Length: 288
Ligand SMILES: NC(=O)c1ccc[n+]([C@@H]2O[C@H](COP(=O)([O-])OP(=O)(O)OC[C@H]3O[C@@H](n4cnc5c(N)ncnc54)[C@H](OP(=O)(O)O)[C@@H]3O)[C@@H](O)[C@H]2O)c1
Image 1 (cartoon, rainbow, N blue to C red):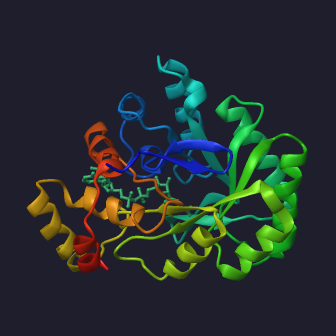
Image 2 (tube, rainbow, N blue to C red):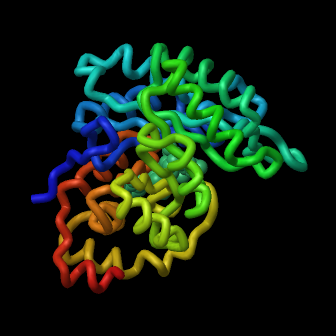
């Protein structure tokens, strides 16, 4: 049976984490449902929570998701020290033509200020894993990376990751961050496979590859036909197609992690079962 725990830098954590974004951005559930969703995930054994400085509604108070994660952990009766909390800096929310958008700010002084605010909102001295959320075209990537590295030297972060990074950027992060770089978080799902090369590259390096929107996301319509084969395997197995998708991603390498989102407890409980769903070589060959 597949193990639900994997090694991520200095941490041993669950291969399936909870992506907390949807609990605090547009379309979010009420706060009590958010806390219950996180509690239920933790009670079901989840030991990885993914948040970000920028997970709040455009125009609303900043960092609401980091504060929600903190509130959930503080009111949870289980072992807090077992839970890896990852956050990110480099994005903030804005409006374009009146619609909520995601803007980037990779200036060193902004990254340093936001990381300190993240630690404060999470109620920790040192963030377990801090990602640079997205490259800022207005700022040389190396300068953003150097600011992130300085945060480890200052004790604000224990380990670092980069997100939405291509191969060249991953190599630059390795140069600047050395052993402090432990994870790359990029989009990967049946409807977004162009990062397969990065997944393989990162895995070969022994770094964690964390798939964001591993089910294709909830914010935009997706090509549902890409899930047909997963639905077929799921029907044969008597499980949800979403758990088959997550198990297929986890089967790509022992360095892969998934952080499915949930707006309710039942979806993350189902997603967590993917860690123990072992697909056969025949099924994997069909799924590609
Ligand atoms: N680094 C980045 O730039 C970046 C960007 C985007 C997202 N992320 C991270 O990735 C996480 C996940 O992304 P996401 O929420 O956009 O997309 P996702 O995980 O691909 O999809 C979430 C959607 O799938 C549904 N779902 C999840 N598990 C399910 C299950 N077992 N059965 C049925 N439905 C299920 C949820 O349903 P319900 O709504 O019914 O609960 C939700 O609508 C985010 O929370 C965030 O932490 C990172």
